[in-house]
Image 1 (cartoon, rainbow, N blue to C red):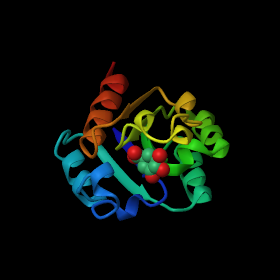
Image 2 (cartoon, helix red, strand yellow; image 1 turned 90 degrees about the horizontal axis):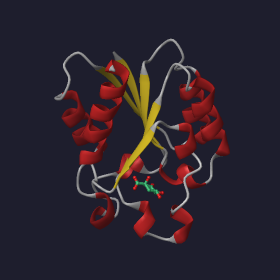
Image 3 (tube, rainbow, N blue to C red; image 1 turned 45 degrees about the horizontal axis):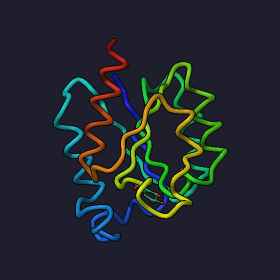
Image 4 (tube, rainbow, N blue to C red; image 1 turned 180 degrees about the vertical axis):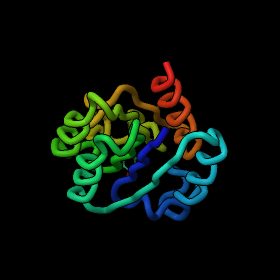
Length: 144
Ligand code: DQA
């Protein structure tokens, strides 16, 4: 099983970026944790600050990956293009949306996700631990 793990703008700064909101773990720490759960699952973890690059990676995922875990970061609230890309591959590459923070407890502009309707589920509010929850949920769904 191959899973594409995508992280959007500014998530390369995790560890030092507003740690009271996002925690102290870096993306590298999170990747290590995810890799310890399922030895049979191969993870391809990527981060980009570019909406276009994320859309391209999602579009290329058909036939290459069994599922996607995505934290679209700020693009969650703005990107119809990311939503369309996820919908375009959803028949064979289901996605789970993950957020470190509970966006519903934050500014109103963060309450709406344009990308969530293109995903099979959403996990938020557990900081870095949420990524392993998302992986468990996705593998469970793919194995059913
Ligand atoms: C985030 C929440 C977004 O609102 C924000 O823009 C981020 C991170 C999260 O993981 O909590 O960059 O996606």
